[in-house]
Image (cartoon, rainbow, N blue to C red; front, side, top):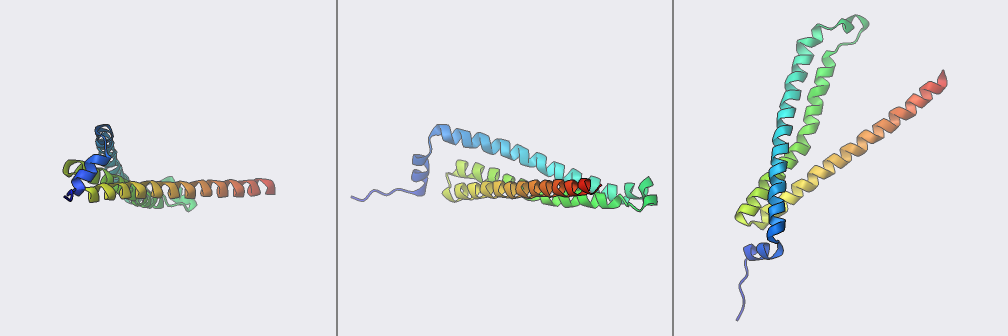
Length: 147
């Protein structure tokens, strides 16, 4: 007689209750952090636009040729850059909650795919920022040795 196993049975067999509880708690915290991230992105966009329009015309730096309105646009660009890891984190928490609730292996795999994308994005961004710091330090040494 052939035994009929479904994806739901395989899902439950591979995960202990302790691991399921840890994943549920992790998805709750990542959801909270992603919501805070979206709020932070919204504030960055609002303040960046305010800074570039209203406050950009009221600075004393215009006399020396520095328009601070461009700094507001930098805030908006940083908010756009920050959007992607927060979005991946949000998708991880949403898919993980659904996978645990419905015992769905596809959502479970998609959740970890989003978590991988989140960490990959953050890792690459960290490498780029460290590289820029090294490059700036190198140019600072060259500039200091010229004097």
